[in-house]
Length: 401
Image (cartoon, one colour):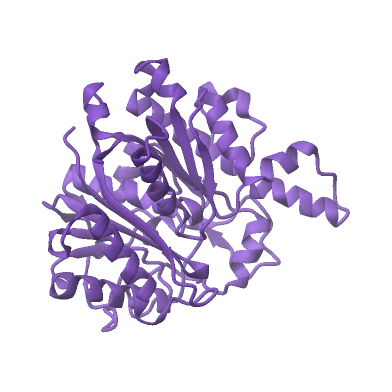
């Protein structure tokens, strides 16, 4: 089945709303700043990609009591639905629209209140318990727009957002829904920050993917959403086709809780599976929007995996990591990076990997560094990985609208 992306929405540290996000990509903007939402005195790492000046969209006022992460998601969903003009396409398509989400921490701000109450600091309400549960975000989204299709929330570490796209494609291929609203979301909170700090993968400097001097990633927050629907149905209703999802895949190599497998075997298999799903040869891929976390083992392992899958063609494809700008958006990373890939196809530009200063022989591919690059290709792979051995990849092609 050919699957169209007909709506997009985003809340990110470098810009909220598709237009602002794209402009920030081309400008090489950084969304990393000192954390202001909570006291970081007890934490070693004190900067994040934090969302500032956030306001829930007026049409969502009834959702004001939702968790912070869910509010990010709701704004992104609202933008995607409006751009896709699904609400104008008739009640039937809304009724049969599914929801597939990906997240690392769910309603982490509400989870914080529960933990504090356990420690005897404050009181947690039933609302806090409900808002922390991962499924609640899908319920908010479905109820806000009366979406009656299937609802799923995945939590597959940092591959969650891309895995959600893969699952949404499966839902459409099985004809379980006429359209799917797919999104990734997460928020920074002390609850989440404690666990992330314990991983010891963060840097106190800048994120420098594929750079010889890279010293770690920086986590961030936000949401990215898309409307997926069968291409023929989208054309039938006159929708704008921003891109096509050609193929996708997920796997788990079960190698180690945090370290990538030797040679990136899990990433090799998932990229190859996405190519096979799309019936696309490696030589037909024009660009890779990488996972590119800026950690020493991830970037070299991902480079090795790309060379294994693409052979000599690996050196002919430009690659980039927008995490250098946005930070690592956790459950939102995969959907946001796919949105960046869509922007590359639509505008003929690849966003840069900023903060790059010195090449690393172990990361010897064609990295788009510090400035955007003109791009004439029509097929892009977006790659994701996560702790616990989770991997996901999505292959997209330029749309007709």
